[in-house]
Length: 146
Image 1 (cartoon, rainbow, N blue to C red):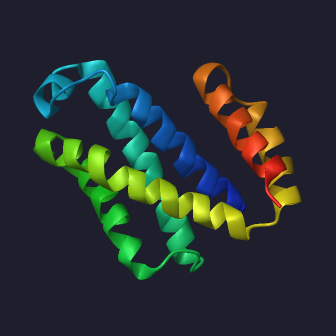
Image 2: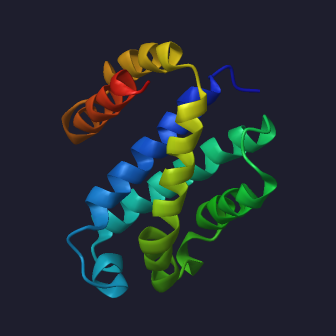
């Protein structure tokens, strides 16, 4: 059983969604995206992170059972990587991840703000570049939250 806090798993998911958004935004189609090995592989890795973090949130009943499909998808990606359909991935990126992001942001709103800010400080120290920028934006949102 992981000793990481629920808040960290939510932040992991938000970071992964942000990265995926950057990895696929310059592509116009599933096939173009699929044929860019580096972007596609990096996205698949982030989808695995989302699935693993979701598993922890489900285990601790932070998320509803309907999110089990994310864990199942993670298992598919890990165990049948070459059987993954590019169009299915593209659909997930465009349609499912924005909804998941909203869910994670809603979860953040119910967590203790001061604890979240402390966690974000620690997480921010481990990141750089665009991810650090995203985390700073998240901090600002939390600081201005009532």
